[in-house]
Image (tube, rainbow, N blue to C red; front, side, top):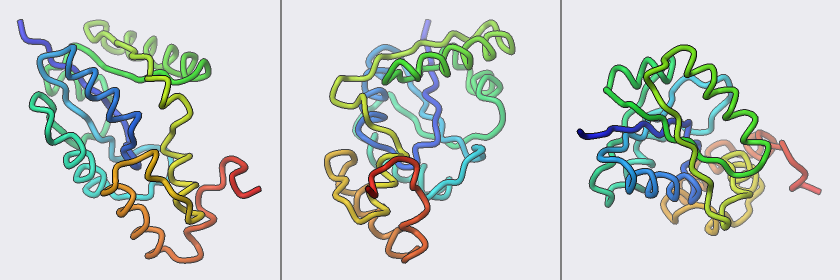
Length: 176
């Protein structure tokens, strides 16, 4: 039996933590579909098409990964693509509570779908898309967090946004 899994996320932008989880998920399952969610309840820096393109380019060398966009409930998308598993990454303790609640809700909606959390590699425990966006918005060097092509895409986007872009992602205290 072939097992297809879904690794869902916004990937805004894709970073080394995402790439690590995708590689490891691809090693566990026959096929890993990376689902780029296009209607999250948060503002995004890149359009769905741009995010899909970036994710495809970063994961292109992994033969059993397919990248697609989706909207709606993740478990409904799992049924559409015949995925039996949702792969999620856990970085820190606070992720566990959120992922635990999400897994319980998804199990209530679709008891046939299992959630497999992968503990992030130690090197990536601090890494979030929010952190990457904030550093990039302030003109910081993000090459330790994302691939060179993603770093260039971030730089271009914040150049396009100009002054207004530097204030878009002040979630933490990196300005202080």
